[in-house]
Length: 422
Image (tube, rainbow, N blue to C red; front, side, top):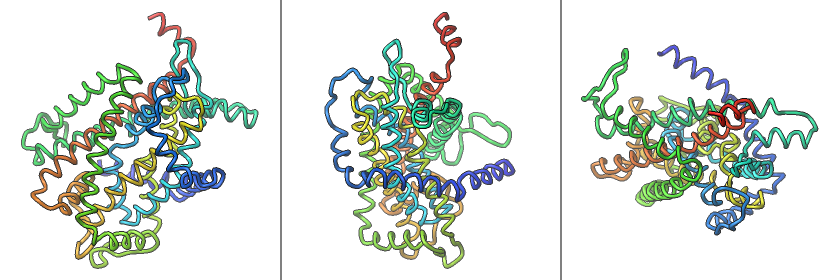
């Protein structure tokens, strides 16, 4: 297992090396320039557009707000709670700065990919909408260059299915849910249900996994409209609870905020020692972890949000592009920032000794919130567990929908005929 983890870490360092970071930031910066900094000049208008009434047109399947919530259901997940903690633990507080930078230029990227998804979407014979990067690549690239890039569209769809079924859309989220539930109800693994080799699984883990499976099935079977309705309720509700906790942290520790921001910027642009010089982080580490976890959290440039945006009941692609770009702002600039500041305040300000090696993932965030808010900590940990469970649950819903749409694109006429015959 240690060897396998080492291989994964090596691959992660290669994939998320400087070339990838430069490519992501350069693309976002180029779009920012071409779009004249619209993430700054049009953000207010975009936020107002979220709550506009449905125009009642026949151009889509769900409302503009429903499409945004469906996209947010997939983006607001373990990355906001666990991912930020992991980035800071591995790359230092400076990772939060690079997460902000990736998000700021990523807003322009999110606008572009979602706007193009609406431009090139298709209405199928049964009336439902199918759109996303696969059609943007297939149609848009051919329109732009005159060459056939369908092979690249197919490749995207294949990776989209794999990501939803085996990657961040399922395995990462269910692991986050079961770990949070187990940490809340049976942290010492006193009640073991079964063991596989050296790994033991408690009843809390098994029951949580079974319940998530049942509830996901009940929602996903209902299709996009049911996913959208569930997302429209759960996403705003849980975001409000988490934002309330985050604001409580910032208000109660307002005097520590200047020091926290100073630490973040110092670590982002140089080597800043922690725990008396025992541990240090380089700029490269901060950039790598910050950008990687930022993209993992807000998915700007991945093309996933564009699949949900393509189903919006709007006529003009630009209108939904504006609404969709707010997802990156909400996800990273607001929610991830609150998580990151709580961790920096708890572990790096004053005489704090940094993050203990024994703390991993959600335990870092849970300990940070409990520390800065005071009290016995159990109530805070329970609320965080609830937030993580629902955030991860909606992410599974969103990515199951994305995978289904990618799979539909991959279907050949032969397979479609077989499906109709059956």
